Image (tube, rainbow, N blue to C red; front, side, top):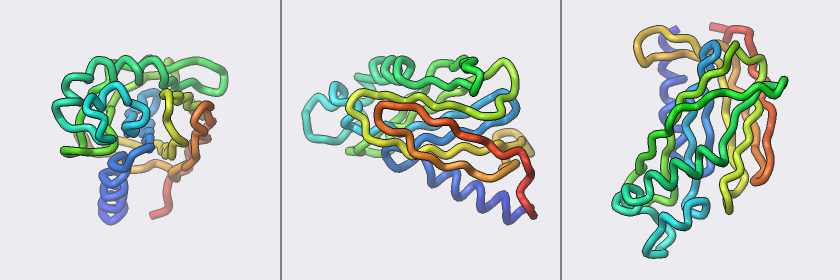
Amino acid sequence: MTSLLLAWLQVASAHGMDAHRLTLEVEDAIVRVTATPGVESLRSADTNGDGVLDRGEVAAARDAIRALFTRDFHLTDLAGDGATCGAASVSTVGEGADHVRLSVRCAFATRPDSVVVDYTLPGSTDLTVEAVRVWRIADNQWVPEGVVDRAVVPRAGGVALVLQDEPCPN
C-alpha cells in the first residue's frame, strides 16, 4: 500500500504542472479540480505580449482569470445535474510560465457515476483530462480507489469520463 501511495503522490504532483491539463480527484460527491490553462487562453493577462505570464501579470489578472474559468468550466453527471464549484484559486507555476494553475473544489448533490467535463476557454487547445476516484487516508492525503481515466477534451466540446469503482489491485 505504501508503494501505491508513493506512486500516486508522484503522479499527482507531476500532473497539473504542464499546460493544457485538467485533473479531477473524486471523493464521494466532492471533486477536487486542478487546471492549467495556457497563456493563449489568457491573452489579456499577458500585458507585455511576450507569450509568458510573470507573477505581476497573474496577480493583476487574477480576478479576470478566475471569472473566465468560472464561465468556461462546468462539471455535470450523465443525467445533466451540475456540480457546484467554489471560487478557484489562481497561482503561478514559476516566473515566465506559459500557463497558470487553478484549483477549485466542486460538489455534486450525490456521488456521480460519471462526470462530463465542459471546458471551453477561448483560444484554448485540446485539454488532457485525468479523473480518478480517491479515498482519504489522512488529512490532505488520498489514494486512488480505481483506475485513472484519461481523455482529451476538444477545444470546443465536453467529454464524459467514466470513473471506475473497482479498487486497484495491491
